Image 1 (cartoon, rainbow, N blue to C red):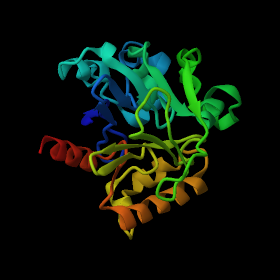
Image 2: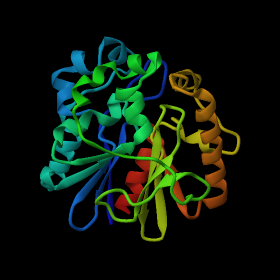
Image 3: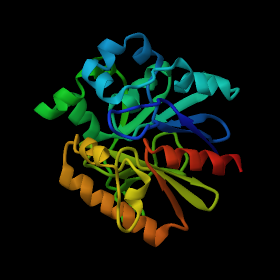
Image 4: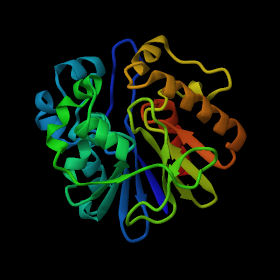
Length: 264
C-alpha cells in the first residue's frame, strides 16, 4: 500500500485561512483507490450549474484543471482507468464532484448519506445538495456502519471489492451520513476525517480555531452530533496517537505535513 496526498481544490473563503481539498490516492498493488475526489472537470466547465453562485462566492475556489484528481492521476504516471474505487466521506460537491471523471469506478458511501442527499432529504438537505442533480443516476455501494467497533467508533468493514485495510468510520454531524475513511499502511492507520473538523488545532486538548471557521462549521445538518464526534476524535488523538494519524479535508497545515511525511 502506497498513499499519495493530493490537493483537489484550493479554496480561499472569505475571512478564513486558505484551504485545500485533501484527497488520497492509494496504490493497492493491482488498482488505485481515491478517498474523496474534490472538484472535477465538470465543476470547472459548468461551475454555475454544478456549484452555484452562492457557494462560489463563499468558498472562492480556484477551479484549476491541474488540481482535478484525474489530471493529478495522469501526472503521477498512472492510467485513470486504474482508479477502480472512490470512497467518499460525504456528498458535498467539493468532495464528490471529481467522481464524474471516473464513471467506471465503484463509489462507496454510507447509506444515510444517499438517503439525505437524494431519497428523503429534509429542507436543509435539499438546499445543500441541489447542485447534485447530475449525480442522482450514479451507482453507489452503500453501507450501514454497524460492524465491529474500531477504536471506539462505529465502522464498516469489508467494503465491496476492497482489501481489509479500508474502513468507513461513522462521523455524522456535518452531514447525515458523514464518515471518515481509515486506511491501514504498515503498522499505522491514516484516518481521513472529511469535514468532521476544519483546523488542525481543533485536535488539541484545548481546541482552537479561527472565528470564521467556527461560523463556517455550523453549516451542518446536526451541530450537536458534529461536536460530539469532534470530541471523540480528540480523545482518539490523545489515546491512540501512536497508532492513528488523523487529518481533515481542508487544513493546509495537515496537508503539507502529510505530503512531507510521504516524501520522506
